[in-house]
Amino acid sequence: MSVREINFDGIIGPSHNYAGLSLGNLASARNAGALSYPRAAALQGLEKMRGNVRMGLTQGIFLPQWRPDVAWLGKLGTDVGNAEPHIRAAAMSASSMWAANAATVSPASDTADGLTHLTVANLVTMPHRSHEWPQTLAQLRIAFSDEKAFAVHDPIPAPFGDEGAANHMRLTQSHGEAGVEIFVYGRSGGAFPARQHVEASRAIARIHGLDPARTLFVEQSEEAIAAGAFHNDVVAVANEHVLFTHELAFADKAAFYADLRAALPCVEIVEVPASAVSLADAIKSYLFNAQLVTLPNGGMALILPTEARETPAVWNWLEQMIAGNGPIRQLVPVDVRQSMANGGGPACLRLRVVADPRDIDPRFLVDEAQLDAIAQIVSDYWPESIAPDDLGDTRLIARIEQSWLTLVDHLQLSGDLVP
Image (cartoon, rainbow, N blue to C red; front, side):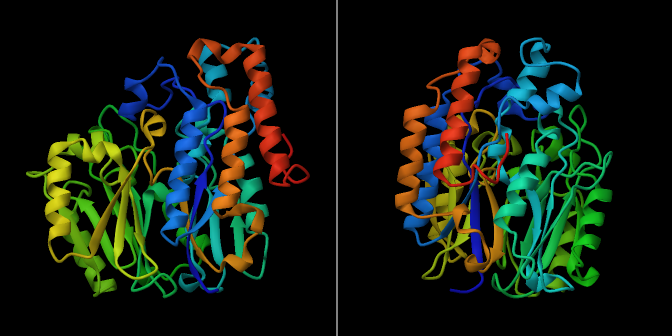
């Protein structure tokens, strides 16, 4: 076994609901108040992971967080029974399922000390996500506890917003070789906040010990943010030497492409023109919020939501692309509709870590049999449905808590993760 890319997916938690808490996330706003289906959501996510394993990819997991977050409520001088509805909803949020926002990761081949560095994201721009990082950090420090291989860092301090790997790309000849790390930040998104601040991105690059000559800081276009691309991974995704991007993703794409080609001459840029796929269609379908992966037998596959297949302009362009001679050879639609309805596609659900699996706590790595066992727990314990008005129901809260305890106990992590 050797260094490889591992996808760590967040298991969708039993408190998954549609409270519409994420400003700038069009799907979240559109479905605010709708009935959610936590059991179906988690099973959809597990099925996506199962598909990855069957393709020969190495698969990891992160656990849902303890909900409601009573510690956070206590710091606000309240509890779940007395909190205002929007505060209660924030305390019950299952948004840690989107593991792309867990951390920024720099593989050992890119860093000055030869360690893989992970900096947990602070997520300060959204109240419902701003209290995730302590529990995320606890999991990172267990999963990547080998100090001969990993360095796990505290979050960048507020007010500098950092939203993790959703605004970070890495391009390289192959996963184990030194790469070019690209930090995408925002300045303005019109009515919507730009969530990734350049100060946070520059701080992470320094902390990780990256080579300035192989580190790029690129501004996301205001047009993309205003259209609903609240993270860069809604309009661009990279894998090894391939950048797959929308024409309007970046504020100054000409300068970015020139700098990227100078730093990595082998790069292939696959750009989707706005004349073929509008920003609106790209964001509605989450065309770019896909897992672009290298298959064990060579070639790349795009694991994308079924919504992409249901959007004619998007699917027509994709079929033309794979009929050609480009680097992306396979399309793999997956059903993650419950996550999509809250604004997170296949790429949102995973954090990519390039490492040797032998250096990782094995409790965070899964095969098909382990996924089957987790799916059985989900089927037995996760609530079938939740309406936003249910979030204060003591019986629902008790069920959510029991679901979490059962899963953590099954994974033999109950002694390490404290509610």
